[in-house]
Amino acid sequence: MPEAPELGSLQLAWLEELGLDRRLLSRYTVRTETAPAQETPKQAGSPEAAHIPGVAAGDAASSAPAADSASTRDGVAAARGLLRSLLGKKDAAPLPLPAVPEDRPSAKTTEAAPEPGTLDALRHAVLHCQACALHQDRGTGVFGEGNTQSPAWLVIGEAPGTMDDRVGAPFQGRSGELLRAMLKAAGADASADVFFTNVVKCRPIANRPPVAEEVAQCGLHLRSQVALLQPGRILALGRVAAAALTGQDADLESLRGKVWQYECVSGRRIPVIATYHPGWLLTHPYHKAGAWQDLRLARDLGKD
Ligand code: SF4
Image (cartoon, rainbow, N blue to C red; front, side, top):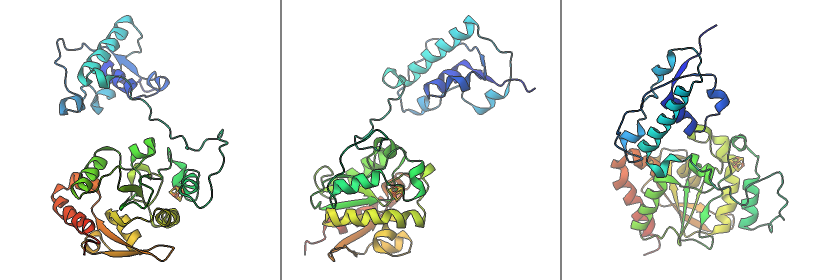
């Protein structure tokens, strides 16, 4: 029988803070550790706070007899206190679960179906959709949000991210902040002039790009959404969205710098500009100048 692996008390506290099941953690032996005295609190989010001591993978390889002594409990309490001081009081509490959108599907839901042919009906259909395998792992479908009355801008990304999937709204987090700042620089008020959505409405696991079948299936929702929104222009973020909106199976660079036309089901042609996804710009900031050129091209549409 292999001996049970050992966890440092700080590791245990950290894993509990992360929400790991205590029954799972009970399989590990806890090693008491002494918390450093007078540790200077670090700001949450700083490099120091991000590196939690005692979580190195090699630590768990050693073993020791199981123990549930008072000293172990003291060690855990000390470690938890240290952890809270490292993270700062505000962030030490367990992360609250995000609010569940009111129209999230539920077995107990008995709400009346919205009027057919409306955005509400389409939202309802998306949130209950099981047309592709992505529904199996989603937290919630992400329909989109923003101005629904012929917005000047319809901004379309690739797929919801992890935070979007929890909150039920697109472009959460740092990439969303960057996107809104870029739009503001182009004269678009994100809260008044824009509707935000994605090509596929359910998050692919591990944030992988959606595959062609998923894009094709969810593209039916997108087509209805564009027809109902009737935006002034479409900004396609990243290669997947650019290819889907222009109908071109090409790389993003060859799709940028041009005004494409998206033909709506009504026959109306809506201009499309392709640019970088803000998530890409966060890791490749040298493309921001190119993104700014794209946004100016989109901003100036219809000025002539
Ligand atoms: Fe339906 Fe789109 Fe979700 Fe697939 S990704 S289940 S097509 S809403």
